[in-house]
Amino acid sequence: MARLHSASLPTALLAAALLYLGQQAFVAPRAPGLRTSDVRQLVSLRANANSVSTGLTWPSPEAEAKLREVDGIKLYPTHAWSDDMMPILPASKDIGATPVIIGVAADSGCGKSTFLRRILGALGTEVSEGHTAIGDMMTVVCLDDYHTNDRAGRKATGLTALDARENDFALMGAQIEALKNGQAVYKPIYNHDSGFKDLPELLQPNKVMVFEGLHPIYDEKARSQLDLGIYIDIVNDVKFAWKVQRDVQERGWTEEQVREDINKRLPDFSKYVDPQKANADVILRYEPSDQGLPYLKVKLIQKKGGAFPMITLKKDLTLKGSKPGATLKMYDQDWYGNDVTVVEMDGEIDMDNMEAQLKEIESNI
Figure 1 (tube, one colour):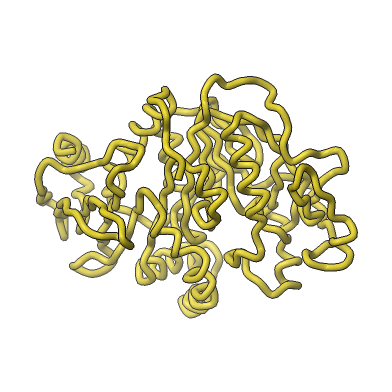
Figure 2: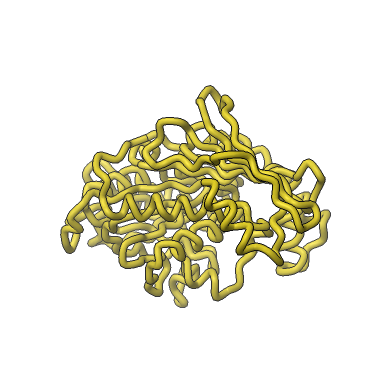
């Protein structure tokens, strides 16, 4: 991954936000379902009320007949380009520094939105309305926008959105590189409400740009542009418990339907998404507690020699008052051939005494 060349203001603020998240990661993690208002504060998934399908599937003779290429970048017509759109163009203004590029990878429903909402809150950034969350210093891009086909197109190809073949990594990598170089882009839009690809939107560079989704660390071109790669790693037992809590309540599914959905996605998840954690700089891993679910063991796994300050503990801690209580410890280990430092909490903070216990954790970091 790319590395930072200067301690710019956004870098310092982001480091502070990561420190904050290092503390908050251990506060009674819950299923990552969000209220509608929370989602709108982060990313408005309602891009275009008049969304219309292109009627195209890639690959097909009809789509290939409409394919065009600009500066070596193939513009698949399934992205709903207008004829005058360019994938990369000059920015409207110079932001005065090289953007800090962050990738956040995880499976669907594993807390990416919650994680990023906390970063935005920690930075105190105001977010504009629209499909992509754009703040005064941070932009959060959902990488679902780079799905090559819409929902109907994926049904036609028989491939899931997790499959690398259903994602336009060439365009993604070129546009992330362009934004890092201070250029603007016309970025595709995937409309989650309609399942269609809407007209691409003009996106300007920002001081901090976060790319969240299934594959920000998967492709070498995109990965090489990242200053920090984060992977949210939810082991299957925890993922099942979280998805049951969300899907049974919000979607009316049965537990068996949730299990079938997870198992259906598992081969593609294991092949295309999960391997990214070997290349991430920071992994936030959720496992069942040694005392069993619903309690959790949360691990903040950090590669040594990274671009941002490492979160460490001065000493091991034992927090009492709640059932089951919590223990915090730090240790080094090997993570897919990389030397890492792990800060681990097993159990749960006493929510009736949370402020005091957070202060105790903070004083020990």
